[in-house]
Image (cartoon, rainbow, N blue to C red):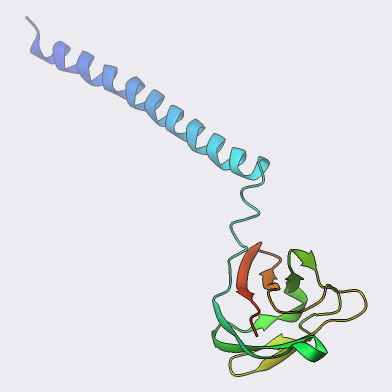
Length: 140
């Protein structure tokens, strides 16, 4: 029996098997990456939710006003925020400019907004991420 010939045959058999395994692995990885972006999941990766601690500081229900205070976390861009009262978009009660730690913003009900009253639920939503930053019911 030729020992040299036996070892040469076994080494040749390993190379094609490893090659096939690597090709399958590369194909699976490429399919996963392409599938992620085709299905739109890749767009959501960069839209992170900001962290902010907001609180209802005061309320003047006679004038349909509430004051929201930024107690900590990330600076918020008012253009990225939308306000809802009882689930309805409050087009007049908006947060303008930037909203930084220690600042107060007064939300006022206007002609095109729902009434800010006792029992109304106010939500502030970060539009790019779709996350709710503030959700509280007004109580007198």
